[in-house]
Image (cartoon, rainbow, N blue to C red; front, side, top):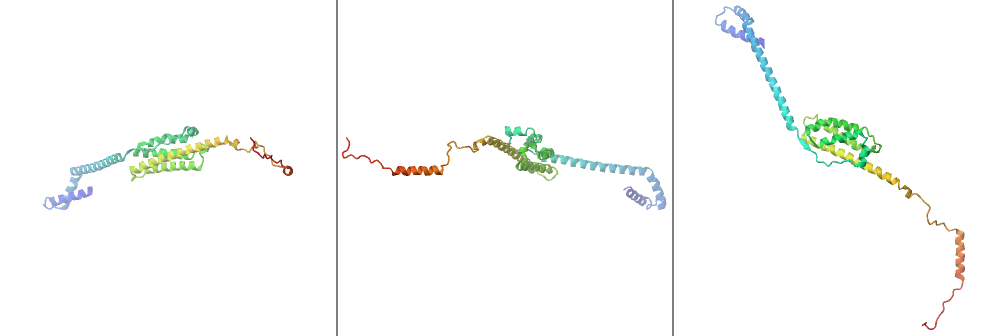
Length: 260
């Protein structure tokens, strides 16, 4: 930039002074110009260039600040408050007693209410921690009663839904509607897990109750004590029956006149 300005200034001064015969030759003009540029004019040019560079830097800084302010405004506009109206499924008293020592479940259960009434921005911020909690829950089933395929499936579903919400934070084109929908899926998945835990506990209690009635179904001796008929006894009874049949029957009395 300095070279261009110098050449332009040299050409202008040469045209003015040499063409108008103020200087006799180009060499005398060049000597004068060199001394001039080394002196006061050179300092002025440097000052002008410095001012130009500083002004350019200020303009770029202002543009960056404006763009940053625009980004903040846009992010505030895209943040949306919402409330999930899905009914909360809680554990019944006996199921709560079973999971009271399952710390990973308790951590997830305490975190879930944050998704019922929140904003899209806050939901995305909480997604990272919630995904970690569901991962710990899935990998640490501390109750033998829940080490069944049906419970494990529901734990995996909850963990996958948490992962989807966590991934949304890194997608610039994600919409508020998609964030709200995924938050609702997380709540539904946790409700499904609670329903299954309640069912497993109920089934276990019913099984224990049925064990107490097993004695009713055990084989006991019949109270009538009916014994099978012996063949000889059967033959003896048949002989007696024939003798009885061979006897003469007593004929009933006949009356000529009716009794008065």
